Image (cartoon, rainbow, N blue to C red; front, side, top):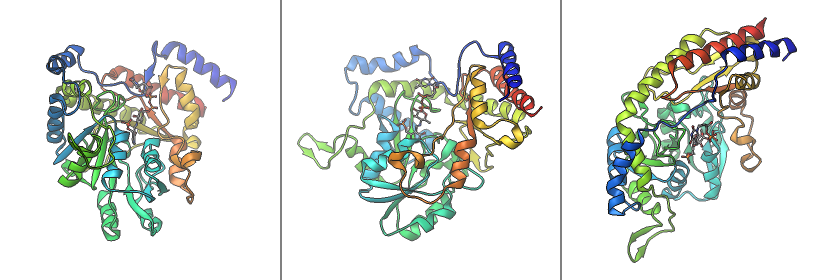
Amino acid sequence: MNTAFKSQVRAMAASMGFPEAVYVTRPNLPPLDDVMNTLKPAWDRRWITNDGELHIRLETELAKRLGVPYLNLFCNGTVALLTALKVLNLEEGAVITTPFTFPATVSVLYWCGLRPVYCDIQPDGYNLDPAGIEALIGPDTKAILPVHVYGIPCDVAAIKDIADRHGLPVIYDAAHAFGVRLRGESVLVHGDLSMLSFHATKVFTTAEGGALATGNPELHQRARVLKNFGITGEESVVAPGLNGKMNEMQAALGLAQLDGLDANTEKRRRLDGIYRRLLQHEPGLALLDMPRDVDPNYAYFPVRVQEALFGLNRDTLYETLKAFNIQCRKYFYPLCSSHPWCSAKTGTLPRAEAAADEVLCLPMYGQLPEAWAEKIGTIIKSLGSLARI
Ligand code: T4K
């Protein structure tokens, strides 16, 4: 960027910059007293993990709230996903997945002796493109692992059709999709298993945490055993399990948050509306279309930056916003397919590559003041106008 642009940005930042960092997200924390009051009975019982009462209550409440038949809580989403692969006995071979995701989606494959085969993303979205899957299926393909990126549901019908015809199981990485409904029902009912993340950066959080949802009681039971070392009784260990359990402190945080969830989603919806109003007609910025048949959770606000029209590229916008104390994130750059440890041989992935180079996620969380979202949108517009002079 030229010197004139830089000095104008400095002047703008001096008057419009935030006094404190505005992060891409913040955890949705309930009042600490609520957490303590919820935790107290477990504390008094001195029962703080291993199927504690809070854990059982949270499992029941979440299954009901999310509309899934069976749900297992986990210590985090990554271990839940790893367990899902083991539940389906997936070992050795290939799994078709997307490169446009957080590294955990792919790293668990390697932990199971599997390897990713990357399929490009949709022409008009950020999820794995079903049209590309079939050409990638080979004799050693073991499963399909799509991700509901930013909480927008994949084309679940097309993926099911392909999976059924080839006899492949489908595991959804639904880390971003807590509470999302598709055509009136939970998006988690699709596939053999769906993984949720309750990390601090997610719309529902237990600090670290996650879950596996399924409609299949046998898969549910196997996940329950595998997340507890494979133990089924004091003297019986039926499989090589791991320790994937959620503890009572995590469960208390989750339970104390449930009452505020709808208000949190509603606030996110308003923030989403503010950004859309300000940015939807801005040259060179493309916003994520919200499909009509989806009840979203407004987990992220990704913006696609096209340099030729906006005047700045994504990386320059990202850096320039830091001068205003606005800490956006480039979810998901770099692509998984570009990390040396998971760059399995693959064809070109032009749509995923373009998305990784152009997407910027703006601050989005329930406690973000609406005035801040207005200001962030206004700053972005002003930067575009300035760059196009
Ligand atoms: N699959 C997908 C598609 C995923 O996105 C993820 C996780 C997983 C699987 C794995 O699920 P888990 O095993 O995590 O349950 C964050 C999260 O660490 C990660 O959970 C998440 N995806 C990913 C999208 O985002 P980073 O590296 O961006 O986190 P970090 O620490 O830079 O935090 C981002 C911002 O959040 C900070 O700038 C400030 C804010 N923050 C963060 C933390 C931890 C807070 O305000 N408070 C906090 O306590 O990865």
